[in-house]
Image 1: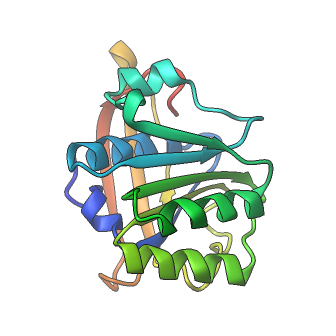
Image 2: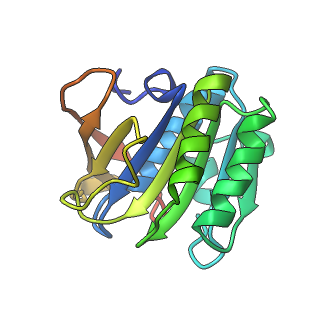
Length: 187
C-alpha cells in the first residue's frame, strides 16, 4: 500500500474523497478501513440505503465485517450527526461517511467533525460524488483527494489513482497510483 494512503495520513483530520462514477472511491475507502483495522482502530461506515456497499466484496478485500459498524443515514446532515456521536464516543479511529452526489455539509457540521477528529485522533472521511474541479465540502476539510478513473485489466485488476487536491499538512499536492484487485462491487 502506498505510504500516503494509510490510516495515519488521515488521522486527526476531516477528509473529503470525491470521485466521478468512473472513479474508485470505495476501493480507496475500504483500503483505509483495512489499514485502520490492521492498526487496531475500530472503523465505522455511515452509508446511504439507496447506494449501499456490498458486504461480501468488502470481506473479500480483507475487511473484518464482524468488527465493522455500519449505520444507515437518510441524508448528509443525518450522516454528520451519526458521525458526531461515533467520533465523540472515542470508540472509533475511522468513520467513513458515504454522502453521495451533490452532498453538502453545513458549516457547523463540518466544523464539529473537524474538531472532534482532532480531539479524538480519528479519521473522518467523507465520500462525495463530484468532479475534481468542484469545490470541496468546505474550508475545514484538511485533505481533499479525488479518485481518478480506473482501467480494468486481466484478472480483475485495475489501476486505482487518487490525487490530493488539497493537503493542509503537506502543503503540496500528491498522488498515488496502484494496481488493485477488486471485487466487482468495489469501485
